[in-house]
Amino acid sequence: MKQSKLLLGLIGICLLFGFSSCEGEDKSVFGDDFEIPELTDANTIQFTVDVTGEWKALQIIVGGGRMAVEWGDGRLQKVENTDANPVIHYKYGNSKTYRVRIWAEELEFCSVGNEATPFSDLRLGYLPKMKTLNLNSFLDTPELDLSTSCPNVETINIGNWADLERIDLSQCVKIQTIDVYSNPELTLLKLGQLPALRSLKCIFNDALVSLSFKGLTNLSDVQCGSNPQLSIIETGEKINVRSLSIGDCAFRSLEFINSFPLLQELSCSSNNLTSLDLSELPLLRSVDCSDNKKLVHLQIPEQNSVNPILQNLDCSFCYLDEKELNAIFCVLPVAPNPYPEYPSGYGITFNGNPGSENCDRKLVEDKGWNIFVNPEDLINR
Image (cartoon, rainbow, N blue to C red; front, side, top):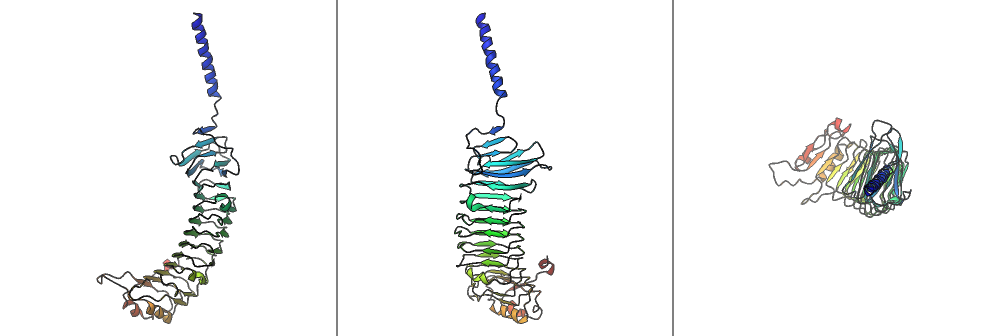
């Protein structure tokens, strides 16, 4: 009998300690069970999130390694396999601002920011494994230095920052793709010697005046339109640009254009050009220089009659007179057409010029080119 009482007593003590242990369990740490280093300025991505509005949820998309998030409300989440769990959701209970820290030393991919939740005061530590970085809609962050924080980054997407003024990528020698858009205060995009860079998209940056392509020897695709103050592109040696889009900018001349001898597609509509000489660019297939209302001279490259390359030309709504248009028509090659019963794939648009009514359209028609018309409301959009 005494032994039974003793056994029951021991069981009771064990249960008591067990419940005490559960009550003392640290519920501020959740997720996977692994050790992480101390979170510091050097190994984290930090920002402030404002959830005082209706939207109180935060989403982070990551990949490539382990991570931990200190949500700013006393809770820490650990994720060991981010490739299996790339989307991290967190909902705050209180309406206030929180300082978030992401342990990101092992991450290769990170996407933070959206227009629904205000993000501000971004700080980046040293993230040597980061390859793809998407950072959108930040406030109170005038400068972004990826040369120091992400030297091995390959792809970036930086958009909708209200007060971002400067981006430094000059030491990101592995970067291949840059997408920088809708940053109204951006005045400096520092590139430098970036031999791996292939694609540059830089659009809707209202304060950007100039870009330097020096050292971008393998740059191929350039989309830098809709920058209303952009008027300068600096080049050094020849660059392998094949597609150049700089419409809706402020260029008065394209003196740099001959630095792109492999250029195949050019869109420079809606600028302030007065003269455009493309004679040294024999590989051009498509040219759109429409809506340059001061453009009085356009010279296109001579074409090989056996294998002509230029197929599409839009010079509508410029200031080309009858003589200029006829000179362009004379350079146009005879359009190859292996299927005479169908229209050729070659087309030209030149309406809206002073000389468009009295020019010799027969020169174009006899060469098998299609004549297209751009509506004025399409140009003056």
